[in-house]
Image 1 (cartoon, rainbow, N blue to C red):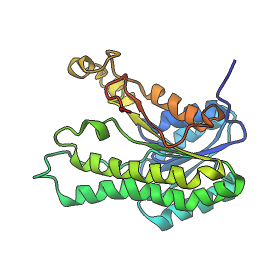
Image 2: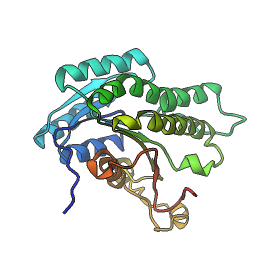
Image 3: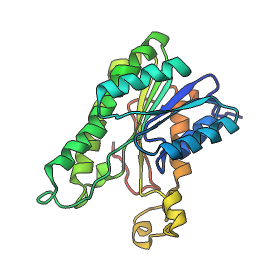
Length: 254
């Protein structure tokens, strides 16, 4: 039986203390990876998550960094190298939150924040972590995109602009580093059920579910499962992919 085995690998997840990030960390750790738990401001949640990871018998660490600042990302790598060594898997999950509104009303700084957190975060992560992957002839870059990139609904413009820019970076990077045994892929969640929804009894949305061929919202665990798959050797010949995990709500065409 094939299994996802990340033993001997170290994985970094940005925004790891957030709703989706924490489940990714748990899933990667259960698959055998040591983990770097990045956070921006949720230090308490990150520390709690680290205790969970250690309870699984895995090594881990927490690190605070501003992923929109190159020097801060470089410092994160230095701290990681001191404690856990080389990072094999980078999952770019962090994103800046803002209030969505129409193109005509969206403040310019919201477009700037999405460019910084969706595009430049990934540029910095690649520039700082990929050279070591090249040296080892192995690596995984996994970016968390969104179904919104294909929907282009009203009020989504800043988010879509940032994530579509991210898509361009990932597709080019996949071609540039493939010869070194490094895969570069994106996971695109739909409207996903997380702990916040469970706590607020807000897991259902009949209007949204009617548009989904599988008839429901996905879960944070289902997103994390695909991340773990792409991080594993089971996905060794997949690169440059944009993988929707949304029950068929959007379907990339050929």
